[in-house]
Length: 100
Image 1 (tube, rainbow, N blue to C red):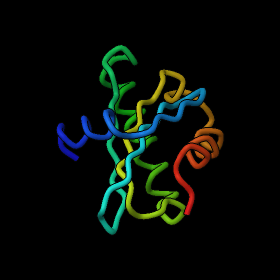
Image 2 (cartoon, rainbow, N blue to C red):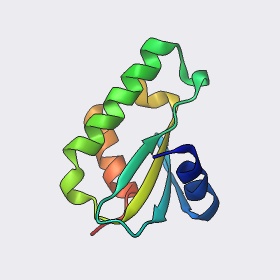
Image 3 (tube, rainbow, N blue to C red):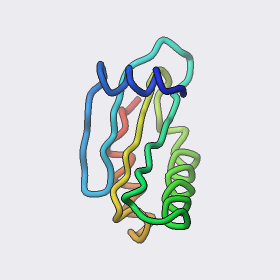
């Protein structure tokens, strides 16, 4: 996703928040769902931010079958994502995304 598409999700999308994430959702007219991650520098140094990014990518990859087509989804992680239990993160992520 490009910057303008991120902005469209922020402007016209819905927001869902939990202990580890803030997720912005917006329907699109595509036959697939697209994901974007916004990882702020305030979350830590490059090592920590890259760990968060890898964990988020793995969440999306592992739950691709549960995610319905036709959504633009932007994930804002909180600092707890870097050290939280992965199973707890996965359960929370699945609860926040739209269900088929």
